[in-house]
Length: 338
Image 1 (tube, rainbow, N blue to C red):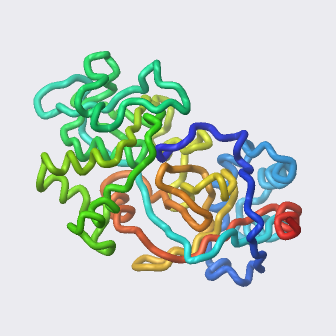
Image 2: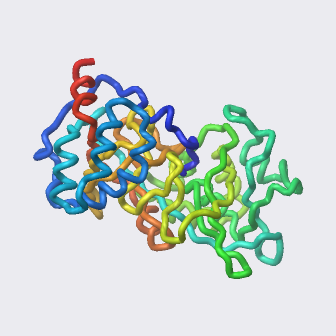
């Protein structure tokens, strides 16, 4: 999960705004060329968690759809209508699951901890800031889950919200989001632009990392301008082939799951993505995650997978396009009447 909200079954159908436009499936660029079976399989991962009357019959039918593309596409076309909520262009970014080196104890080059959630930290509570925690506010209490060899990796692990840590004994620890300190997320990239060191087109995850590493002291202070801090938990039940856990408590899927703003996009809903830019995407994905920086109606963060190649692809995505919700028919018409 992307520094998000836990299992949000009760909030799956967030109130949708009245400004909506219904489309035909023919109006979705590339609709007939997509792999609808892959989209259906991803949808089925979390469909049973959508506890709303207009979704229950749709999910019941989905479980019995034959696993061929014609049947999968017909399912979506029969039971949903495409609806644009908000005003394009959308903003698409990308995220991934890092693979990092670490140690269960502080030793040698492994000097930078990631922490478990402190027991006194309650939902809605504003806790120590990033700079205070990095300065040792909770050090020495046995909350250290693992130690990494790079403070920049610690920061970006928090931004991504999950990761795989290769321990010194050869084992792999998978960690996931366990909570945050209650401070609002502030973009380090926007701070670099504000300071005049970079322009908008120069800012990427890779450039932020390189900039911070080039000036370690000033770079650490730059990271501290984002007061939000994420805590982790060890996840021991995932198959290595599965993606990290998203906001609905299930594994997310490479290039089929997106993080969204649940105030406007229902968790669990299919979302048609038309991402422009250098590597355009025309694909049906599923809203299965959230993120502290993912705000707005036409806003999605695309999950690119695990490891450095996924990180290289995700870190440069900052593209316009269009995001279209697939909404159960009755709900779609009700939205237009509201």
